[in-house]
Length: 212
Image 1: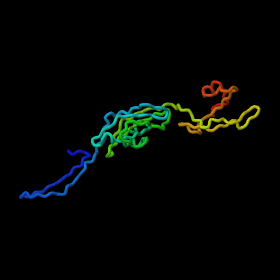
Image 2: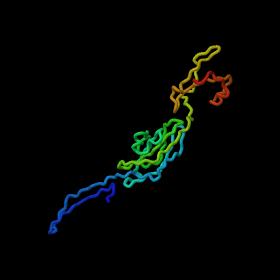
Image 3: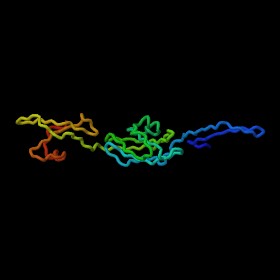
Image 4: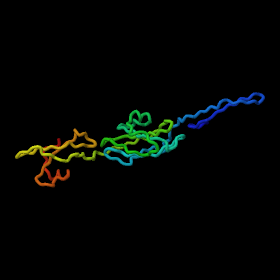
């Protein structure tokens, strides 16, 4: 009938027939906390998502010993369904995003791949290290919608003749696609100001070759 996480102090007295008494040395014992936190509402909600990130939220858990404010949470994710139904499975099969944080009920998982279905799990841990999990949540990221970044926008003319012009430019970068996999296409026009955007370039310019 003792309470987990509580320290108890024990004493024994001895008495002879004449009612003379003596005590032993007081002994203490802390009942270990072996009960996992309680996940009242196990649903993990997706509050927003994009091509490379998913925002998650969940309801705070409770515990018989650790205060709600001291419970800690961590998110794991995987691209395979059903691999994170327990805390140990999530730790073995999933990828941790960040580290344990106390008293939090939301996070945004970043660095994801576009057009990919991810499975998310939240582990909650009490101060004794007992762990519970929520219900695994799936969400697909959007298609890649972020344009490459052109660091130096200048196009240089390296040489020319009466019938041709040699051009060069600095390689662009992208949040998702490797630099080596980015493709380029040259357009040209005989009037200025007709190719200030991708849409205008495609509509007004003449493509030279194809994307390479």
